Image (cartoon, rainbow, N blue to C red; front, side, top):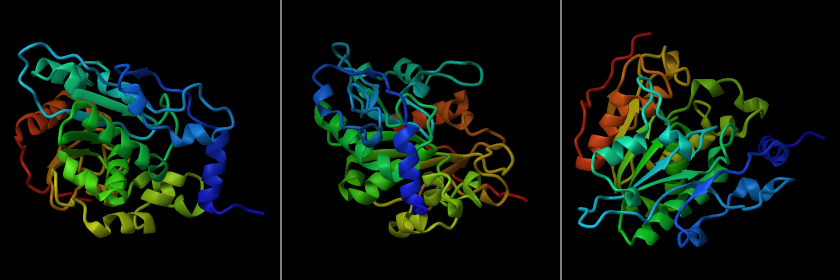
Length: 293
């Protein structure tokens, strides 16, 4: 007997699950951490079933407060991606933000995918990402946070906001980097095979995306910035006709032509662009990129 597509994906993830992530949070924040749904479903559960990531309660005396930022990684990623420093290709977003005037208390990142290098999907992670963002907000006693998301992190946050509409009232500025707004090339032709649950969600034209997009790409509340390659040749998640998929109607859509998927997240130019946006509301050019096949 064959399993339904979603059940087959869930079945495999129970046995080929993510490894346990690291957690670098203040002790009094730990009780607020949401449990990781995939960890709870695995045959070999983690010692600590909560999501991982990093955050701090440190801030120097006299610091002028800024809106806190929550970083949300993509598929196969983890919170440590926002700290990687490999110049000139990648820079640590955390370091750049700290050097620009943020204090550690204002920067947080979630690991919803275990320790990384594991293929996950949106629906199983949306609830815990929602609860993580809300936990940061409550812990810091702030009305709103900024969110910087990359790849699957974009649709995870959007799914969290679809399921919990109050989330959009609590996000001031939302950066969506190379997200599968209208689907990803890597899932073309695989959804019907049930190989990856994520492809049942973000294959171009999927019912899941149609449902997610039914409330619009940019529901009221945040200001939006979307970053993408746009050429259809460099970001291999959005090739050819999928080149403009990461664009979001109602956002400032800014192309970084001939930039690969990961440099869009952590390249020096990209980091400076989304830093300027969340720190000061400064937008780059929002002119539509003209893709030519």
